[in-house]
Image (cartoon, rainbow, N blue to C red):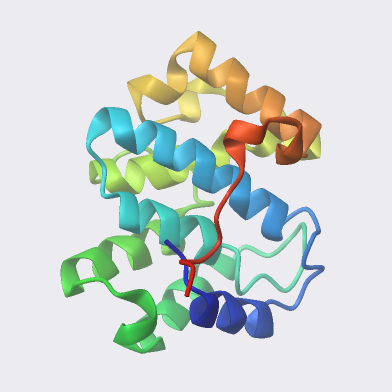
Length: 172
């Protein structure tokens, strides 16, 4: 889980509106999408969860910002290990997932694919219905799974579904 220290670093780093289109509500839905996929396909849940909260952390604009992924990867590279609590291989997967997440790629490690699908399934928040041809995993392409994720994105409010509550840090 994301701990308070990491969440504070993310909050201090993020330049856009905290509850905006690329902020905390989006990251929370990406986390839900990603962990649901990972539970079924064996993707690394720690990588998926960290991706959810870090992939847009270095955005400088809500729309045209093609280099935000590479900036996020560079940011992750310099984060102290005690904040991420992952091994070097997981860190590489996380950096790769962030670097390329908005480039439209579909071929990668299953954990990376899960990250990308989790993010793409939340496009509905901006009025875009995701294209299943641009999703990577069979789970994300499943019509029922896809529609549930799309509806979460449209409603943009996870509090409507109590079972979706996101714990952002480990209790002390």
